[in-house]
Length: 233
Image (tube, rainbow, N blue to C red; front, side, top):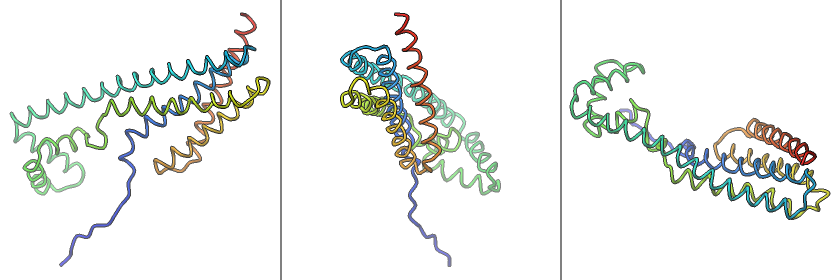
């Protein structure tokens, strides 16, 4: 007689929700604050002015990230709740149709029709709403929207990311500020790319090159605009 044997597996998909917000927050914190610092510094302002602009960018950016994440993820959560409410009504009013609908989903995945109906019947007996949420709507505990978690993760990691170029400003003399902040921030971005890839279980090379490219582009454009505006003003 054959026996079902379990084996331990370590998957990282449960990290998707907070990892996306955390990487986005830290990446945006480094790039936006470093770009702001470079744009202000190239206009030949004092170091205190550069620090003031950087701190203002940190606070404003952290609040913006938190608000943006909360609003966007709340919209996703509202949609999920509306879909679940609609599915709950359909299960109450049309249980047979819902069973057949679930069975057809399994048939489309390669299960024979009678077996699919048996599986659907057993799953709906246990928890009909959970079965339809998972297999019809694609909703699960792992992918569920968590607005507060996303907002806090984005704000916190933005602040940590923004603090990195600010620390470089305090440690470098004014005449070396531009190269120190630019190169140091690219180094922080590279580290972030590696850490984010490792946390997600991916190979680090492509994410690291991607974040360095976009970070460098943002810094170059902002520095150029700062230089032009600084001359005009």
